[in-house]
Image (cartoon, rainbow, N blue to C red):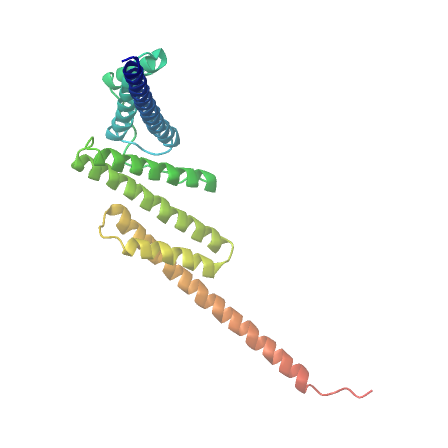
Length: 254
């Protein structure tokens, strides 16, 4: 009898130990998932705030600003649900809520007055900023948080802005090369910009004006190249003539 009781107690202890272990593992798994989700939401906030900082020189519509601030707010809501005791998170959530409730002022325009940065580093940062904003738009659209018409409209604005940056940068580089009398390099820049314009599936005032400008620049380059080639050919002929004159000149007697 005693032996049976002892065996039952041992079995019970084993079962309890297994149960406690399973409960502990489940809690650890939940905690790991909670931390992982917190990290994910934190990354969303950091990426969005970085996009806002990098977009200082990017014309943003009220829609885009609302999307960005709403994204931060939604991430903070999730973080507070996961960490309800955090006063810091609750404070940040309250600030984000007030910012959305107070409305967001309309920012500049769709890029009509956009000015190309002077320095390459600024240009690279601008391009990276636009790419990050477009990625955020796609992400919010895929989550169903952004209506398709709004997504298409705003993404089209960014696409057009990227086109402007590309074309204006190529024209600027081509003009610099032309000023430095590097006519061949200038033509390559202008031809690349022209090919980009001609490859578009749509047209607007900007596209038409830049196409006309590039056609004029390429015509001017063609004239300059012909003049340069003619000058080079004339110099070569004169040099060859001088060489022949030296070769067939009467030899002096010493």
